[in-house]
Length: 360
Image 1 (spheres, rainbow, N blue to C red):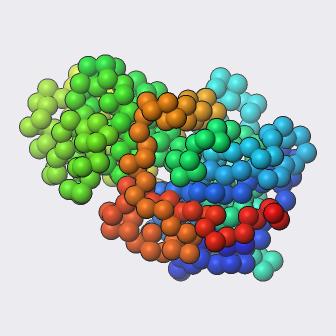
Image 2 (image 1 turned 135 degrees about the horizontal axis):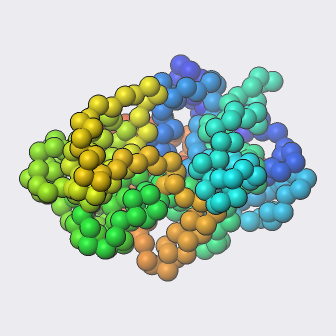
């Protein structure tokens, strides 16, 4: 089976990856489309600890093609995959707060191998392969009418951005919003703030190419430059909500400084392991808050179907996010374009010229 593999020294598209059959509580999913996220490169760049070799990819959609004992999910069901391999038993799971389940941080046995040797599964999915095996808790049914490229993005970029705004910061109508970084997740933060009724959505990014799509998705202002200077010029009394979507400590610190009284700064970007931040503690004295945000801080089994419904109803526009769709064989080139800032979201079409992976 073909897969995009990080060996620890190079990024290769290989054709000899094997995947085992699903065990109890697991399903096999034929991957149809998978988005390329900056997080997929965190292990490559050393920003997170990642054993190698590893099949990358975590933002994906596909079809259930096999199931293990005890699984009720239907074979043939179209699904979005989630990295949250929850236990389903703890207090967090019972309360519908799966991002707080400690089981999602436990190491799991990989489902991949190559020439008899273990190949790791990136964030419990390994989506850059035609077929993967995950737990039943990791698949969320979506309508067949949802395009594969859009369904894939719901699993990370869209759920994270919309969840950060609607659930974590709870942006209200008439509030002011600052979005730092207009990447794949930042663009979803912009649209979510617009849909929430924010009075102003100011976007700060170093890439001028992002202005057109940012404004299309709801930005009322777009600036290139230092966050502190922009915030002072645009909103001298501060913003009600600030979203740091890059993962850099100096940007989060600037975002905290840019808060209005009672404002909320949300860390959406993933910083490298061990990153520390320094800011003036007294900045928080006026009822300001600094909030972490993991996968939008939402329950994907509730949130993703609602996003799918909103897309199909025309209430949210996700089509502009997809910059390019390519086969997996062009993996290295798509990564280069992501690093060069040329993509809003690049998507792999796993079905392009590939066998189904389920024997059909």
